[in-house]
Amino acid sequence: MNFSYYPGCTLKNKAQDLDRYARLSAEKLGIHLEELSEWQCCGGAFSMGKDEIASKLAAVRALNGAKEQGQDLVTPCHNVLKQANDAMAHDEEFSEHANNYMQLEKPYKGETRVIHYLELLRDVVGFDNLKKAVVKPLTGKKVAAYYGCLLLRPSKVMQMDNPENPTIIEDFLRAIGAEPVLYANRNECCGGYAVLEDRAIAQKKSAAVMENAADQGAEMMITACPLCEYNLKKNTPADGRLPVYYFTELLAEALGVKE
Image (tube, rainbow, N blue to C red; front, side):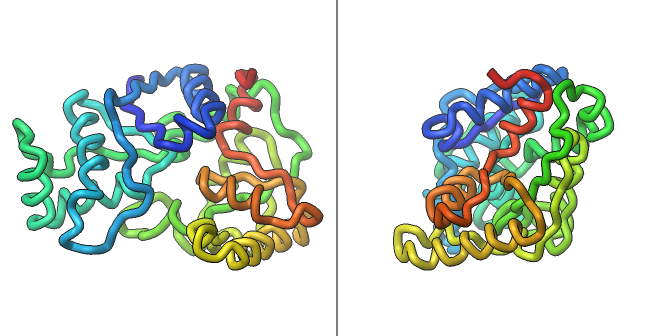
């Protein structure tokens, strides 16, 4: 199976190992990820300003690139892409302005289906099939899933899981042999976007997430957001910090393709 692929900025720069794990794991599961050519940063955050067009054009170009390849678009960094896609499909004024800016041969109207990598594992591969492909199960590992702010919200656009009681990462953990640990703060903000303005707030929020997971018996934490991974690692006091992993690293380890 072939899919267009948008890795996002972090996985192409500071976290190249995580991108490599995603590609190796996909190939092991019979999926080829074809990286979009000449893609740009999606902007990192989706502006709510109706008249803010320029910062969203990179996301629209990526979406149109997948349309031109005739493939669904897989990404581990889906929030801005899904929101831009929804705007192009349902906000006529925004869509008209964006298409006028880009002067595409054929206007883009939100035709591309955007799939988070975890959705690929759940809905295309299937967690049962993933479990069968595991060669090094994480047996006995008690892992806390951290969802954070943007993986599931806005829920009507992301349409990935229940935003209040999600299960996709816990089901993923079970498929690779780990024991998921439930805790109250798994959907709470870790403060990643506040680091530059007020690091103390980021430290307080990340520590609260980490302490809550540890209190429930977690030995490590997994996240699907590179910014969350960085913040939880860098802004949680060392004496209360659990090991934090990006989901593609644990996936590659379980599939036996981690170098």
